Amino acid sequence: MLNQKEKEEIEARLKLATQAPWVTDLHQGLWSVYCGEIDHYHPVAIIKQNQNQENNAKFIAHSRTDIIKCLNEIDRLNEVIRQFTKSSPIEGGWN
Image (cartoon, rainbow, N blue to C red; front, side, top):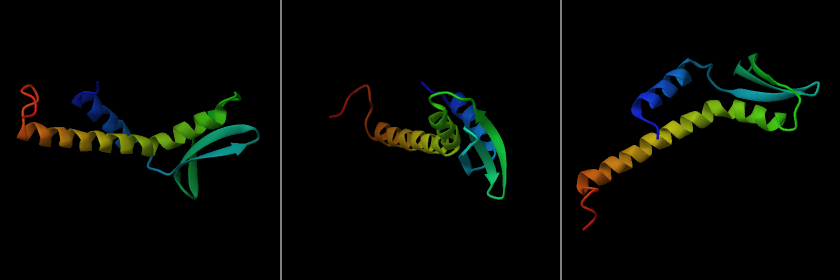
């Protein structure tokens, strides 16, 4: 279960990471992940040869935006829970 402190730590790391876009590129048989502005990409990771290097590179590249979506969904679901618990107690059940 993700507690508030853990969520805030994730948000802090996200805030400090280089902004999107993060992209993948295949060059000389190696998949790489780059981030930054379109004209000034900086390497984040070079994935060594293995059977899953393309998928690993794509996972890393998409994590920057996927984490934002997940955190936003957590906030949305927590708000739904707050709305329901305001109108009816969970322990007592729904009448």
